[in-house]
Image (cartoon, rainbow, N blue to C red):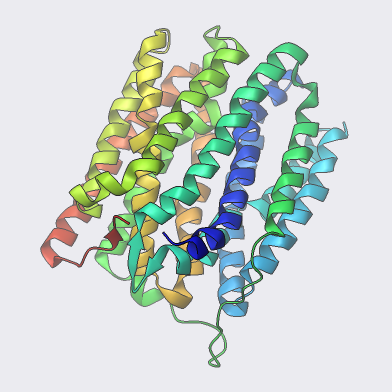
Length: 399
């Protein structure tokens, strides 16, 4: 990778680091903060579902706007600033309805940041329709490092000082996100004179694309138990906030390892084969989490599988999106991935998990994740079979 290319990728690495530093403390500890406010499990599940609910509409709306205008960087700057200002409302004790409103406004402006960022840097991590796994991994690992820093530091901080500083952590991390967006090069993607955009429906009618999104849906749905209920699950089993942070950190350490070395492993299998491997590892991960919650070693092994169940899966999905949604389709392709993979699944998983946990406890949430990961494996196999039959060209270059 040349010095010029590295310099061009550096601002995107900074945005990835700051954004996931924000997510690294916010998502794991939001349920614990809400619990400390005296809210019940079902109310907590509804509030944690707000993020996913905004992903049902915000990413595609922002993606379509960025495809139409080409102004991805300006939209990122606006979104980060608006999210920062709205986050200040978390410090006001005005009830659950106010808290829900603040989260809606904040998440509406942050839920599309990574899809737009991925689309904005697509020209730097792919050439001639070929996805460069090494370049992408070098950018994305900074996000993992940011997540690792705050998930561990926040766990230790909240263990010592309590959860009352949660709103301040939110504002400070969003300051870093907003600052990083102003480092991005103000590059405007070309906009055709035809006006709106290239139609997306012909791509969505392809069977390989349909099975791909089905696999994404069930794969990420299987992880909602981790994203929304893992901290509460560990807390209910008697683990300290520091140990909760350590277990989250384990998953991020292996994630960093994957992103740093993925250019060695990805060329060994086709993209669709990796999709099957990642789904099968999710079956094992969720089974270990559900059955071995009281056994720390089992949880460490389960969290270590994050390298495949998330990191490898995410890179494979981005590469497949680059193949199916090139050029002026890429904003909407990234947005659909977020809407289907993290919007629909987040709402269904958070609310469904809230009902399950309120009535039957937290362990059944992870057995449900085990079941949905089996479905994800079946869908991924259909993607592999379809792509194997059509024998498409590879969309990944090791770097």
